[in-house]
Length: 159
Image 1: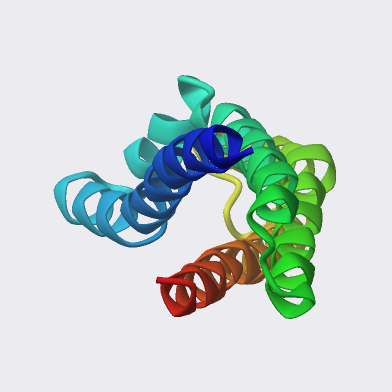
Image 2: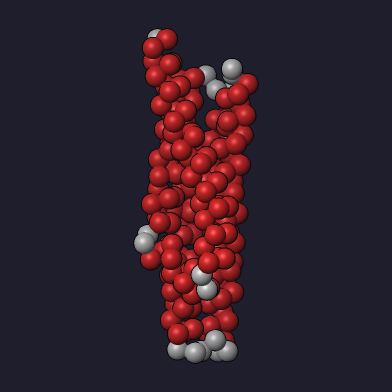
């Protein structure tokens, strides 16, 4: 049994470090650097064009599911498990609903922008819709990040 716990700690620790590092890099560092170096259109096309969003949210969900499985083995408190479950739900909401919808609206908006139709009501409606979807996605992703740090806090209490 002790070997299983040690193996669980090792595997889940690597998954947790990877997830926290990826979340921080994706949420804080990459957008800041990309927005400084590129104009708005290039910045918008950069990440979705190479399909980073779906991969990021899918891997986040997978890592969180693994953490939930190993957390039970490690005997994490129920509060920590609830935070992990909330983080998993947030990653799935982003992966399945918010990301595809916001990317679709973004490309529709860029198509109008390339046609110099920025003053039309259709463009303004798309911009408003994109802002709402992107804001919701960022807020839901913040739940994922906070859940990871709360989980790390509870792990530190076990040391």
